[in-house]
Image 1 (cartoon, rainbow, N blue to C red):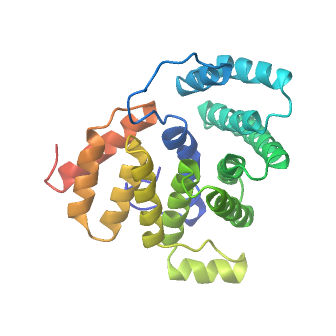
Image 2 (image 1 turned 180 degrees about the horizontal axis):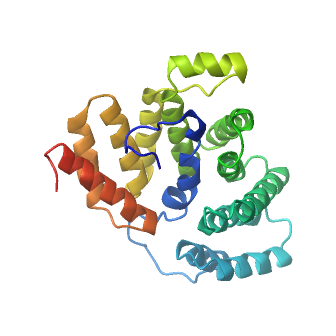
Image 3 (image 1 turned 30 degrees about the horizontal axis):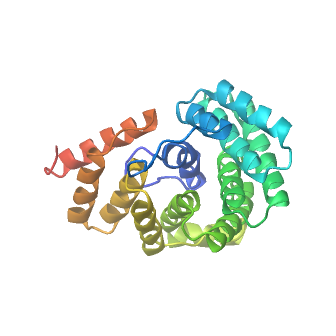
Length: 273
């Protein structure tokens, strides 16, 4: 995370939010309403539960066993991609090579899922996620090349399913970070590297608001949207969003970090909790 909560200070770090997206907003989603009736959990349900609890070896064991039984199941491959991204993010930041191995494996799984069923949005959204986390570990020129592919995959995912919460959260971050690349940096990048990502706060805000409407429990989307409101000098709305977020349950450790950042922002504006 950048040194200040509401701006990315370095051009080279613009893809960073993709790293956190996969774990913070997308894996930990829980049903927003009560279950109408009880049902027996399937092996995939159990594997998903283990993943949410960050019991990665157990989740991997169940997914792999199911894949052995049904190697043509495209859903299993994107779920394995999601798992590999999660495992990669659990690796120490000092162990870059090990993390990259997991991210590459995630991209392979996602591409396999797409090859089996190109009409499923999840294969495309998790390919975008895996490319995003890989891109943070390489140079600026390669990052920009990856950015175009990431955007294409997100556009495809949302064309296939406009309500894909994974793709919405990812593209919200994409647009927010693209908006943080000022005109001077765009000129420099276009001159020496190539096209830079294009986006603005309005597009980012639209994506995050839709993501919140689809699942109002995800803390990350409130936080990101509040940061956009701060950038646009709409502090009243930012405060409202952060106060809502503080009422949401922390689903994973990263949520606690975001909640702490929001408390600091509320205190800074003398409107805090």
